[in-house]
Image (cartoon, rainbow, N blue to C red):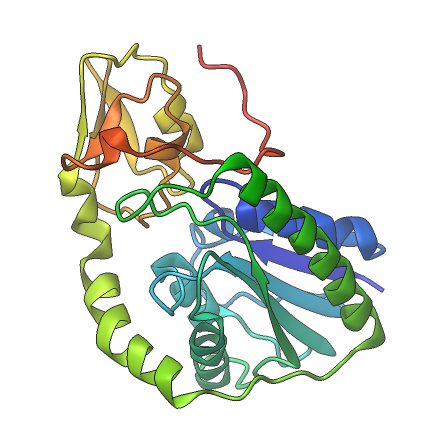
Length: 261
């Protein structure tokens, strides 16, 4: 059976989950969502199974994933599923948001199943990542969870989570404020004198929101707040306000990066 798995990732958590699923599902193709949204019109994949893997931001979807889902037509797909990664809570509201978008989209068809996987948090604007021992424990549990999910997907399990009242309130109160300002949120990003003009930030930004001008990164205000540029800068030169400099950085240990030029 053919599986297409669309994914969005910043520091590698959702990519690691997507790759783990594809290793366990035969005939599986990974497709970055950022590459698909460049085209216009309806997105109608031809596969037996279609999945979406993405992080949870403030109990909701990344803006790019919401926009992608609005164009996704699953009407001819026998089985559809989503696997959302999260550092804390909010997975169920985000799954319900995705279900709502898909049923209102061109295919008028939602998910057959939705799952969540806990991963180390990466939102350096608010907190540091866990310590190394805790990260290792979380990733080991995540790998077991991915294996479990892959088994359920192969079996065609129907799994629609119920929406808790608290989760609904959190999404209603916090997420709209985040998503309406997300693209301009890069205005708080700065670069200090440690910058070596290596271009890593340009390389890792999944939505091509950064370019180098006179050897320094400039943000173009279509940011997704994925934290890749801050977390993956080898010189730790990118900051957002006066708190991030004191916080540790994180990326998934399996994330493969090309060497900076």
